[in-house]
Image (cartoon, one colour):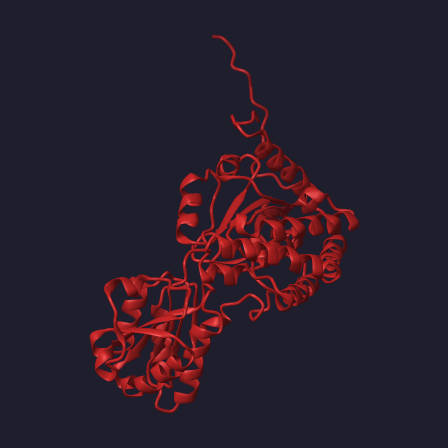
Length: 432
């Protein structure tokens, strides 16, 4: 296949190197892949001081250019996060290798043995903002699932990401795998635009970041894109007379534990039946420093709520800001979520089983919870080790993406001399 015209030879070289590495990685034995993961976990420990120093330099530069607080929070890669990534690498190494797994097997009536077998996607390009931990997670998931990875983090994390990229390649080399199987790159917007044209080498693009980044990647890419879009997530309080302490805890955890992440709740919906408890919930949120905006009816229960606008219902704050709306019941809650939400993560708190079932069936989101915090939209909590991201698409993956979501499949068919029809010698036509 002739290469499409590109102006940036470096982009072409990166993509071609990834494609070559992907062929080796696709058939690499599990022990080599796991050895690279364990090697990376060891290097995170051995080089923790260097990683912290690089991250501190990135943080200092971010403050100097007035990077928003929520972005600074995503940029921070401290001792706790480093230790968490070490544990994740260990867990991912312990997970079964998805490559070669039979998804479905059957013997057809004609005797053919038919299997659908998991295989790697090939080459995955990730474009993301801040988040040095993504450099670790994405490399780990791509490696274990047999995919080569091209990782382009934000310029605000360039020092830390460059160091993590070097550690990845040392770990790959030590395990006897191609060092180009994980490439952590920098490059300007034009460089990324060139990569997004190279669909003959790159099989999938996963953008993670703000709405503008994701829209820009999706608009320019010739390559299939799985979007990890904004998280306009909801907590709906339905019938909570017997669940008030749990309801308050779920609301606080969903909003306040990590307000800068995509599965943090942004809107609190309260049924009129539960509205008498609104003052208790709002008071607990205020104690945590949450700024609250409410609809007209919610403000009747607490006049100190700032007025909420139509724009608030469709805003991802990623901050200690929460919008509050009183709804008639579960049907109106479902209608609000499906209209204003981003189909990411939504939860209901209720003692009414029928309402819980109605909510689960009616809410069109990747993750729907009952009596649990939105924080449990999390790969580690769901047994994936971590996640490469949380897809808000419906094709090819939805919700937290782990190893299986980074594979596709092929049909493997075994026969015993099977042919489709009966062959007879064709007689040549003769002239009259």
